[in-house]
Amino acid sequence: MPLLSVDDPLPARPRRVVVAGSSGSGKTTLAGRIAELLRIPHVEIDGLFHGPGWTPRPEFEDDVRRFAATERWVTEWQYTLVRPLLAERADLMVWLDLPLRVVLQQLVWRTVRRRLARTPLWNGNLEPPLRTFLTDPDHIVRWAMSTHGKSAVRVAALLQDRPELPIVRVQSRPALERWLAGRLEQVAQG
Image 1 (spheres, rainbow, N blue to C red):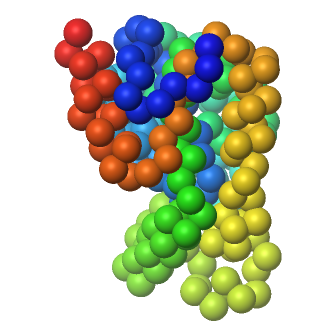
Image 2 (tube, helix red, strand yellow):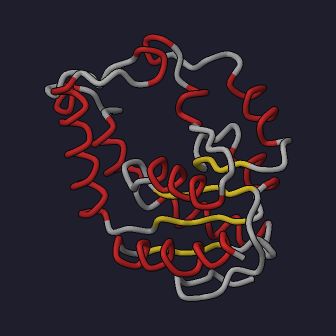
């Protein structure tokens, strides 16, 4: 199946959805919205991965296997260790293929807002001080800049491995809103 545009009909009502995209593209927000529309559970994969002090949780892979084995879920398509499992179980992928400038604008705003408000994230973690953007090569904003193009490579490889998997490519925020209000809502009501 070729990539679908936001205007193409979905082949069926999805039950297991992965949302792909670079860091900061809005995967978690979109996954939550899809879950709400389809009335299926959203499993925030960052919450399963990050333990206290930003350390990986040892139970991460087992937790992902457990929820992926269920019949209905939405999650983000990230973490090399579990991407193949999620792709194998998914019956729809939504790919946020947004321009880098859009992603960076969203990500910088989110990072600053979380840091200034000291918003607790997964397992009590907080965004690091803003100055770490200059000192930490793995700072989320620097990470997004250096890895932005990898989503396209991953999706292309997935198309080879699972040509039957419908993948909706979303290239702008207005297109996303049109898809949510149009195609996805139609499927959700049908």
